Image (cartoon, rainbow, N blue to C red; front, side, top):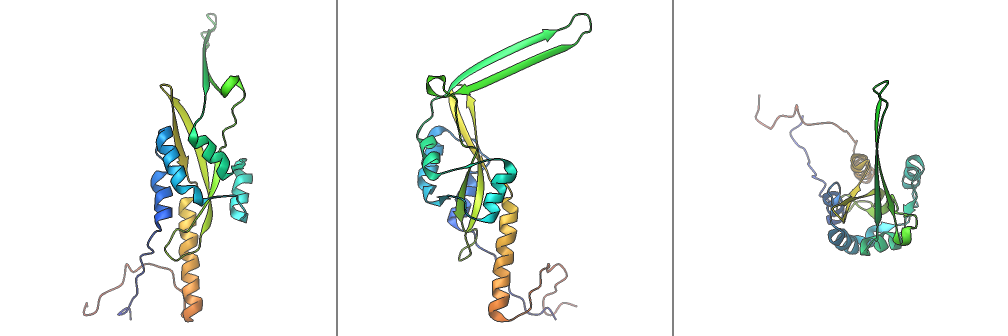
Length: 190
């Protein structure tokens, strides 16, 4: 009769919060390095079907912890820019082409990993998941700015909630229902 209910808020782990809070914002080389040194323990080689499948679908190869840490400690970039303006006076067609190429020390090809994998538990006391992390950088006024993106973060949270709920149902023998309490009334309400 909806007179009794239990609510569990699923508290997030400090590790999960750290990665989520860091994601989506551009960071200086120094801030990027400091964060990765602090969270290096979370960086793993992908072994789960979900993580490996993501790498295949996204056509990326995950970097190792050592490769990510090497990036965090410094990067020498040579940037060359080219702008070409082409115009056909007879037809009025115009093309503006802007190219920017990045090379490493000695103008060698630059191989910056596009992704790495972390293993963290979203919820206190919950299972850890291998989560892909996309790595991005850009040049701004001679400085390298880094950012990370965690694709599908909502899916990991949904899976973690489902797994926790199923575990409780199995351990208690109680039926499992997913829904909302929008129609729930407190005792004494008409």
